[in-house]
Length: 389
Image 1 (cartoon, rainbow, N blue to C red):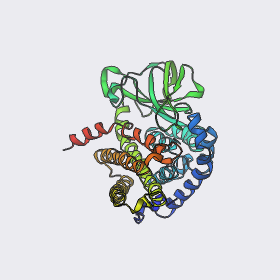
Image 2 (cartoon, helix red, strand yellow):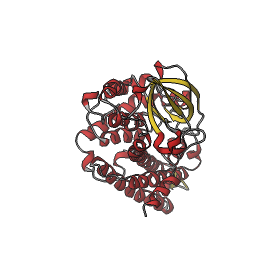
Image 3 (cartoon, rainbow, N blue to C red):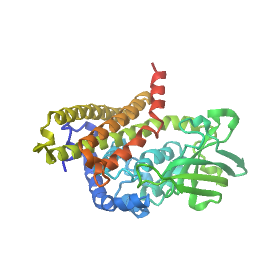
Image 4 (cartoon, rainbow, N blue to C red):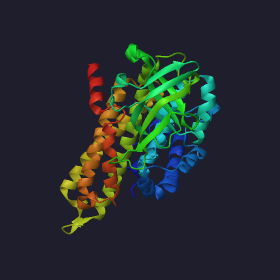
């Protein structure tokens, strides 16, 4: 197969040089050897084995951007991008370590006490703890201010009641950051983030592993809290009511990460389709020899190149601390829209075979669709961008 990482022919950006490039190669090899051969099994079981998480931890693929003193590799988001791109280029998009690495762990690093960081980050780095963040509720999707889950202080514990849905890593996760209301009367200012280690708590219940149209290998669940008691020391931040601000500060990285998965799948779709149209014959010649095919592929490669240049710039700005929420929203919506368009066009060029599950493009078509929904729908992204005008 044509190498997706080289399909656009662009020079590597400065942030992707040296050890980041070596990490990409190592992550690509790990995904190819450890995850891809069993991926059909994981799709059938609707989750990746916990054993694979431990292997990823041992290989240094968990918490790459966390400081070494807390068990991480001391990298930046560039290192996380390398790992997520490797996942996308190999085609094992349901392995949920991206959320664990660059969404869950950073909340502990940025808002956790020293004691919390020393307690939790090393176990997240080994895979002993698998992370999730419980934001969405049955009645509150992108509207984080509408959260109903309640945490009431009772001595040195919180009593938590409520439910969450669409929680990525929800079946496997034993370390969950819960978005909850500690003071419902204060609206957004009454929101707090509380950590629960599910192996050590009563009143916690997992619902079913939700039946999705795509990303089958990633467990996505309902969670229920019934008078669940959590130590008050598990609050993130020095005081209650900081949760909404914490979420707003971290959402740009989450949205950029969605862009990472998008551009990686775009590049893989192009690589697979270029190979296919060169090999597949119709009316006595290769499909690539038809002008329509050439024009379509020219359009897709051009747009993919624009997307990659934009993405590279966003990563560079983020590493330097300059990626603003509006630009992150642009990256999330535009790159995920591009992903949907490119994968759809590539499936069309596969003809009837593109509709067959045995062809990777079919799985990519299903897996791509959710990118425009989670992390804040693309309509919400446009709303945020519009407010900045």
